[in-house]
Amino acid sequence: MNKVMITGRLTREPELKYLESGTALCNFTLAVENDFNDGVEFIPCVAWNKTAELAANKLAKGLKVLIDGRLQIRKNKTQNKTYINPEVVVNFMEFIEYKKSNGKSDSKTHSKSEEKENNNNIDTVNKELTDPMDSDFDVPF
Image 1 (cartoon, rainbow, N blue to C red):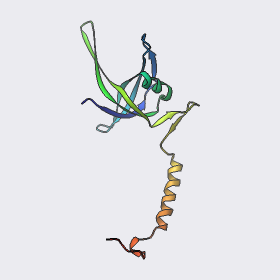
Image 2: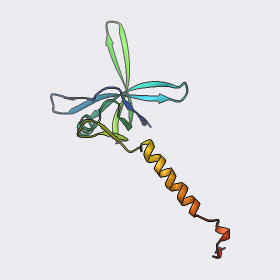
Image 3: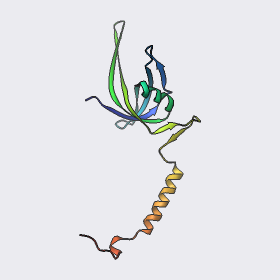
Image 4: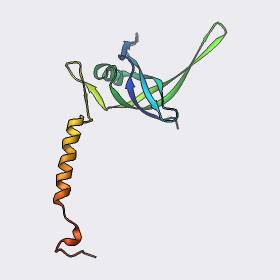
């Protein structure tokens, strides 16, 4: 089975091209954190057809995306040298952050002020809750 799932940030704007046949092709690179040595890996990705057009319209440099795809190794030979170019062919993508119409990014993550407000709400609810053993209801078992 050849399956790759990665989450990372775009290192540059996606490049959308159309082949002579009219097929859409979009290239972009993801910066993916490496937990083993606290470094970053740069993973080239390629999307085709509708996925390519969607990537070009919705993604922008710095935005975070989850990619589900397969690994493809391309080999190029030029004057006694062979170049091996691994890349991820995108089957599915999930936008963790996406480009708004005004060019700024939007995210499913919360800001620190929203997190603080949510934590205060949780603390309030926790204070209102009492120990279940102090209540008058019977346990069903």
